[in-house]
Amino acid sequence: MSIKTICIYGAGALGGTIAAKLAGREDNDVSVVARGAHLDAIRSHGLSLREADAETPLKVHVTATDDPKTLPPQDLVITGLKGHQLPPAAEGIAGLLKQGTRVVMILNGIPWWYFHRDTRSGHAELQFDELDPGGRLWRLIGPDRVIGCVAYQGAEVVSPGEIRLSHNGRFVLGEPCGEMSAYLSAIAAVLTGAGLSITTTTDIRSEIWSKLMGNAAFNPISALTRALMTDIMADPALMDIVSKVMKEVRAVGDAVGADFAMSVERRLEQSRHIGGVRTSMLQDLIGGKALEITPLVGMLVALGRLTAVPTPVSETILALVTQLDRENRRGN
Image 1 (cartoon, rainbow, N blue to C red):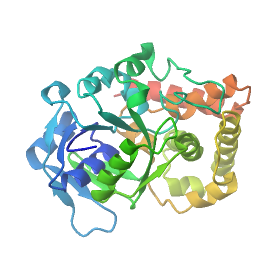
Image 2 (image 1 turned 180 degrees about the vertical axis):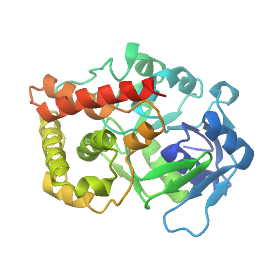
Image 3 (image 1 turned 120 degrees about the horizontal axis):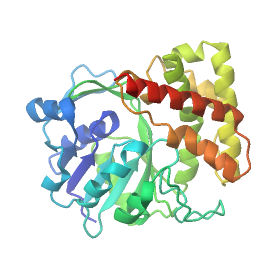
């Protein structure tokens, strides 16, 4: 499988990180789909990535556009969009596909393709309109093209065209079907060759749930309180809420067949080493952007109802953060 042309659709914090790393290699033809001031800066000055502890930033120049129709079909598409941003982009992504094109989707929370070829939950091929209104992603892109991706990488767009990493993270890739396919191996090799830390798995769903333990708790709480990760960790009352949400995530994940590699207690201890960073939801709140609520909290509640697992704390957080999102966007 030859991978030369690569489009990063959504070149924000994570997408831009991958674009910059890939563009640093001469044998990759990298383009990005971005918008607004970030796009203007990339066009004018290039894309700058300051890695953790690096003395100087990596600066690259890539083809950048806000209209995917101007780009040819690609060998590989990598989406850096959040879950609620994907459905409106379905047609644009579909226009970049040709026979054999795979789409790596970096997503937090429960993705739209989650139950495709799932053999553990008893809900194979179940679709949720909340994640994919009208089934546009399922129909135009198709779950068979997807490579799931779970990112453990703190990143922030600190100014248009400039991304800063809080640490040197890693990315986990996996086929929804659980196979260690040739496509998966080839994509992992390209990303590894660009200097990214990549691992592959035969159980991407369990990786999704393991990360959701943190995202479903810390992201909305940080948005509701405007607190950095260190602030949350230092507050016993907030940490009690975090623990309760993590236990709800664990219970719902167990009900759909996920395997958790660590306990809630171990996950909490691991979180103490993250540092004083803003979660992605807090970054979006400050920027006046729509919050990524449904994949992180809404689907936890929905799957709890599907599996008859109570999620009372998450239901309360869902109501609060939904109202916060509504008021925040009204004020911007």
